[in-house]
Length: 432
Image 1: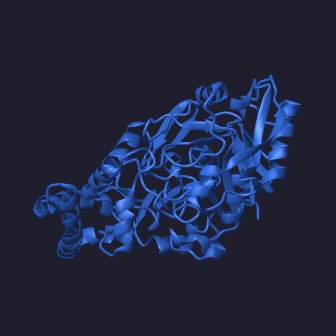
Image 2 (image 1 turned 90 degrees about the vertical axis):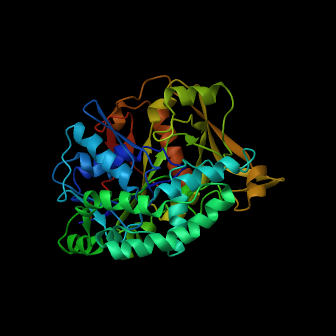
């Protein structure tokens, strides 16, 4: 049985939630392997909308095991609220259907406070990162600094007190410099001891569970958050998230070896969007950009912020396909392009008179990159809800085929609406 990694191949918001849900019907295990509750995945099933932040998208499907891996940073209070909210929508969540890795780092209240305080002190749009303020970055910092509190620490009072003491030596010093009050140790410990039973019921040696599932021939679906262009190493630094987003993190983030990955599916929007600050070569500040945003309902699931919109950037997607070893892409929101007379695709950049086929690493060079466009005929017919190639206009098929050529990667799935069944299957990612 093949195991599939799903990653966003742009700046996030590509439609991973729908695709993961579509694939999860045939998966046995769905695992989140990085990120935190700054990710927003919206699922639309039979007209019912589910909005998930921390939970894997597989929780809405009965009979599946959903896993939160050690590569994730987890806000325990948010998770408990999210579980309660999803249960109210009729979804059953139990320790048999949801497991959390024992070595998963926990986001503390002071992580979010630090995140927001730093962003508030940044002056000017170029200084701001555009963080969601939910504490994801500071928690990853503590993980690397060996002072994070993990799920397993909640099970022993003495260990928990030691972990909290070590963390607060660092954080109280930081808070003093930012003008924040010191953390009340007793109050924090009381909060953690209160939430502990709610979290520990789901705790498990996920690395062991995942390896056993693989040996048993179970189909595993690895669910990524954010997008590859927000990767801490390969994204548009420093306007990135605080974890590795690319496919290579999938194995590390749940405790499997790299040979567990059989197919990497990159989710790609038929145009480009970005939330927050940072470079965006194909961004549109005109009527076309407004039209994309309006038709695509481009507002962040987590923040509600309006997304920046632009033409499809084939140079960037070709880059992310290479870095993640993407075998095929799922092209989403094709229907948003209906009605445009002409479409543009970025095929490279002009940097100080030199032609580049990739986005350079240096921030100053990124800022000077001017997109080089190729124009392609649009279509007036509707593609919304199409479930076969025969239902697509010829110009829409030509647009898809040109994207395949430019990114050097085939389309495996084509999505034509938020509904899970409005999907054209070209290549089955789960096929051996």
